[in-house]
Amino acid sequence: MAVKMQTKNQTQKPIDPNKVLRFTKGERLSHWVHAIAFFVLLFTGLGVLSTVFQPVMTVFGGIQVARVIHRGVAVVFVAVVGLMFFVGNPRYHWEWLKSVFNFTRADLQHVTAFPKEFFGGHGTYPPQDKYNGGEKINSLITIFGSVFITLSGVVMWFAPSFPVVLVRWAYPVHDLSMIMMTAAAIGHMYLGLLHPDSNPALPGMLNGYVSTKFARAHHAKWYERVKNEQKNV
Image 1 (cartoon, rainbow, N blue to C red):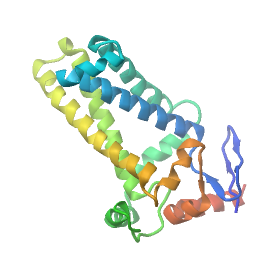
Image 2 (image 1 turned 135 degrees about the vertical axis):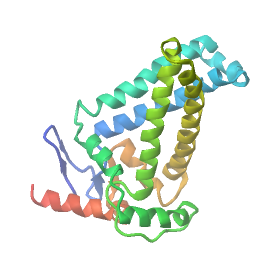
Image 3 (image 1 turned 135 degrees about the horizontal axis):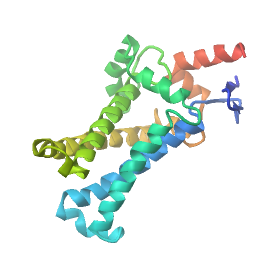
Image 4 (image 1 turned 120 degrees about the vertical axis):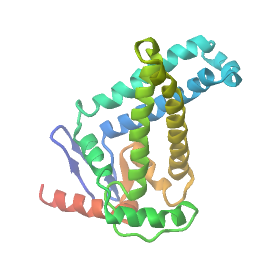
C-alpha cells in the first residue's frame, strides 16, 4: 500500500507503491551535516591530540591549518544542526528529541533482544515506533556526546577566559566524548552498511524512503500510525 506523507510546507509522494517516506529532507540534511562534520573533526582532532598523527595533517596543509579547520567545522557541527530545530521543517527534529527521551517498555525489550540481531540473528521484540530502542540509545549517546564535546571544546578554545581547573578537566572530557561517539558511530555504520537485517534502512537517509517490508518488520508501530493518519487526510 502506498503511503503519502504530507506537511504544511510540502507534499511528499511515494516514488514506489512499496516504499514509505521515513525521513524528510531536513532530517537527512541534519544527519549528513552532523556525520561529515564529525569525521572531519575526528580526523583533524587526532592531529591536534597527538604528534603521531601530525604527519597526516599535510593533507590539510599542516597542523596549523588543521587546527583552523577543526574550529571552523566545529561551528558548523553545532550551528547547522541546531538551526534545523528552528528553520525549514523543524517539527520532525523536535519529535525526534522528544521520542529519544521517552524510553518505553517496548524499547527496553528491543534493547534486550538486540544483541542477537547485532551478531547476525533476528531478535524478537514488540512493534517499534519510528525510532526503536537501539536507535534511541544511539541518539542519546550522540546528544550527550555532542553537548559535552561542544562545551569542553569552548573551554579549550577560549582557555584564558576560564579557570585553570576547568580547562584541565575540559581535555579529558573532550577526549572521552570523542571516544564514546566514535564507538557509537562505528556500530552505526556497521548496522547501516553491512548488517543484512538493518542495512535496508540506509535508503531512508539517502532518498528518504524505506521499503514497506522493512518498515513493518522494524518499525511496525510507526508504520501503522502513518497509514492510519493518511487515511484521514
